[in-house]
Image (cartoon, rainbow, N blue to C red; front, side):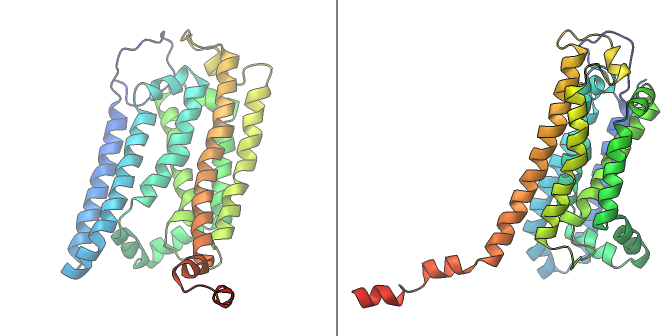
Length: 290
């Protein structure tokens, strides 16, 4: 029985294979979310429940989308391809597991979750320390470098436990990375929108450097993908170049999209007079001309 996707020595085919560990993990996450949602609704009075219902419904769609993308990344066929056949599939997994899914899952957390967290001083203190912007940036980029080092990839991806460890590190680091950007607790008065944009931009530097190594390396960097049973689609060097482009372009697209959303929200808050001027009476110089 295969619990997690890892490198295999058999030729690739499209025969479906179950990965029980992936299903168990996703089922536990879904059950935890449903419990948090129901427990939060039970804590609210009828008026507050009615006011928060539509907001939590919107969050719910984001959470389930994030869970779906996590399943796509970890289960067959993408999980199996990334586990030991294609570096490009492995990189797509990283983007989904380390960046996209944690962002959507945190955006989808119910408001009651953050209320409960704010009432637990010890847990709040731990979260505040781990998700301080400088700490979060250091943790994410340390995990990024370690889990893309050739020795780590070649050694860990050869076993189910090691492959699970890489995926777990990606997800946890991604959750810590996005927390100070999208989560309201703990409040960070010294981390306004412009600082958040700078924080996200700073994360593109190390990832861009690693991507360039993959794109311009003369020889394959990862032995596990160079020596993998061929799929018949790409050479090992072409596969590695696509992996580097995915890290560079895909990662930048995700971060710049979030930066753009933050920027336009900040701009609308800082320039409300544009809407007022449109709705108000005509300027005095227009009246004078008439």
